[in-house]
Structure formats: structure tokens, C-alpha cells
Amino acid sequence: MAYYSSFQLLGFFCLMISFLQLILLQALAWGPDVPTQGFVSLPFNRSFYHIQKPYDVPEDQRYSFVNGIHKCWVYSTDKPHTTTSQTMPRTEIAIQGYNYSSGVWEFEAYGYVPYGTSSVCIMQVFGASAPHATTLMLRVYNGSLMYYTGPVLVPNIYDKWFKLNVIHDVEAAKVKVYIDGCLKLEADGRGGTSHAFKCGVYAQHNDSFYMESRWKHIQVLRK
Image (cartoon, rainbow, N blue to C red; front, top):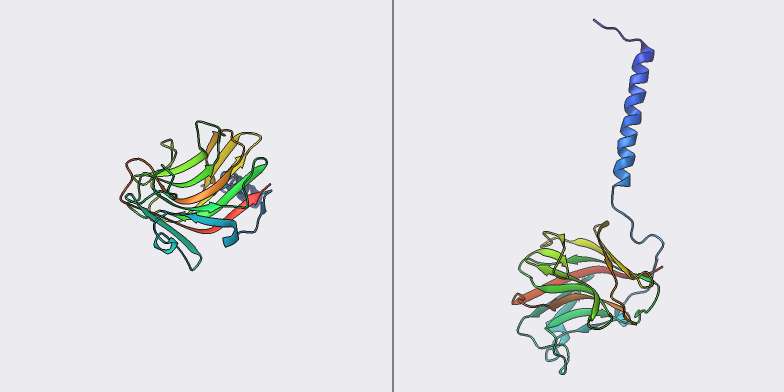
């Protein structure tokens, strides 16, 4: 039978502690990022956004704000948001007062998409160079959250709150998307001279009859 001195046992325990510390440090390093670090949160209230909704229905029939939660919904049979628009139906929170043409800007919010909502844009960075209209679109197709029509960022987004951060660096022409603190996408910008953030539901081709998304703790930040 082998016997170990107290010094040998002490050395063994010290080695194990060092090993566990290394594992912990690696776990922290690989954990969620802090996408808002270095940014300043700007004031945000009703004076900084308006609701784009079908032009022929009252706002309260397509949008509500109750207990801190914005709820946007629309039907595939709805009219566009203006009488002259040829676009698909939408109910969107269109942020105004923070339109930008330079700098590094960030959108942060918690989003929720109920089961069945499909072929819809739930968040966009509006503004781009022709022939594009947007720098970024986050869409939901059959439960998958996508960058436009692909790639898939989150395979099952239905019926759960998720934290969304979108960072747009105009000069670098880059857009980053974080979901629950983890970087999911880095894409090139699409030019344009003016940009703005929007979230809600904006129907795409082959859309579901009913589309809905919910949002809370919306913030606009700037570096």
C-alpha cells in the first residue's frame, strides 16, 4: 500500500485547484459578450417612435403597450401603411429622432415571437444604397430566426423571450447581431445616407395569415 506525505497531498490539492481555476477562466472567456460596453444609452419614450400600421385601421387594433410590453400584430390581408405604398402589410415600431448617417449605433431589446408567425421581418436597420432598402433584416421563417433568407441565426425562436443587440458601424460598413449576448452574425453594410431602427412585424412573401411579435426594454445606444 502506498503512503503519501502531507507535502505530497498538499501539492496534489494545489494542482487540482489551479486546474479548476483554469477551467473557470476559460468558461468566462467563452461566455456571453457584453455588446453594450462602451455605448451610451439614449432617452427612449413615445416621443422617439411612431407606429407604422395598416392605414385603414386604428392604431389600437394592431398595437398595444401594456405593462411595459409592446405588442405588434398584423394580418396577411391588411393594407400597407400608407395609401401610396406598394409594400406588404406591417405593424412596426419605427424609431424617429435617432436617424443617423455616421458613427456606431446600437439597438437593444427583448423580443418574443409566438408560434405560427412566419415569413415576417421582426427587426430591421432601415436605409441602404439602391437597389436595397435595408442594411439588415431579421426574419422568422417556420420558427427559425434568419438574416434575410439565410443563414439561420437561431433555429427555434418561438414562444420564448430572447435578448437582441444589433450594432451598426457606418464607417466600417459592418453590422453585428447578438442573441442573448452571443455574437451570431457579422455582415457587411449596404451603404445609404440615412438609417433608422425598426421592430415589429413586416410581412414577407408566403407570410402566415397572422403575424405577431412582442418587445420590451427597447434601447437605442451610441458609441
